[in-house]
Length: 438
Ligand code: 5AD
Ligand code: SF4
Image (cartoon, rainbow, N blue to C red; front, side, top):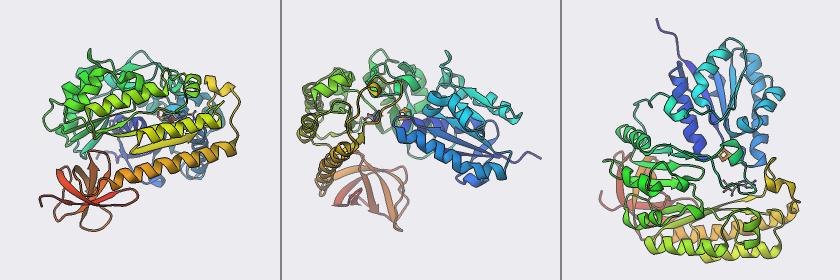
């Protein structure tokens, strides 16, 4: 008789890289006899894969850990692990503050999970937040061949050498490291064989990718040759790394989807300089112009920080003007949050009520733009990769090339199909349409 499988519950916070890391950790622990569960109460191990980008994220970890106390009291054999960027930044503090935590693993060390798991089974707590020399992706076993959904993430580079003054990533994820192109192509091939048709290449600074002599454009040129891989996306990018080849690829390569997340953070040159972004608002607008010349229908999104130390009303108005000038399809905006150890954390904060007011105004503007972009889709034909049944019976949902959520009425199952859809109406967060050919 074989042992019943142990149950693993993973909660993922933060960015898509964490989503990818959670999958890889589940696969690694899968080889140790764990299977994933959606029900925390039946878990033998709970893994919290954390984010450190803003203050609230770390607070959330501690409150989630607090809520796990009764479960641990009930099930003393339950193992609790903390992974991700808070583990990296505050590993020792977590171990000190939270006796219920058995295991702390940083984002660069999770290939060591099997040994760490074995250690915690003997009752000894395990902490690993090194930046080891060995490349975790190459140490880990090949990914399992199980059938997968039509879309997948694939991390191609990690870390960042840019040192924006507000950002913890260079400290939590370390220096920029790119995976070799041939390994990525092999992993993509495996994903496609498992049913994937769209891959989103991930990196904290994905367009700084240098694992191919021709950069990210060179990697994309290799990936488009994989039969059955129909769509490629990448995120998240830095404006200064939008090189000529990558911009040209948006015009030349139909598999590269016309949606680009290109964070600018602020529209004020004074603030951009204080943020150490190394470009001006005008530089950014010129880059956008070139991208749109290559691919006129591209949909753009950005991140914005309001209330960076020293931001005046006039600086903020310049951000609003930049948003007006670009016209975004989507945008993510945040109040500045001082992160320990970053240069900006030393500076005096903008008052909370001022930040609140600016955030509201900025969000109202980008919401208007987002709705206008969605409305403009009505009557157009888009191509949709269908992923799952919609909310109503008989509906199927997926994403258009512009990353809009689209649903249609359909009789058969559409999962994994890419179909032409005419958009008939736009709601707040999704578009409705009809199949052009039934
Ligand atoms: N405060 C607020 N927002 C931040 N971001 C990164 N660091 C901070 C911070 N300290 C935002 C940036 C980045 C996104 C991932 O998170 O806009 O692009
Ligand atoms: Fe959070 Fe950034 Fe780490 Fe992703 S990389 S988990 S967003 S701190």
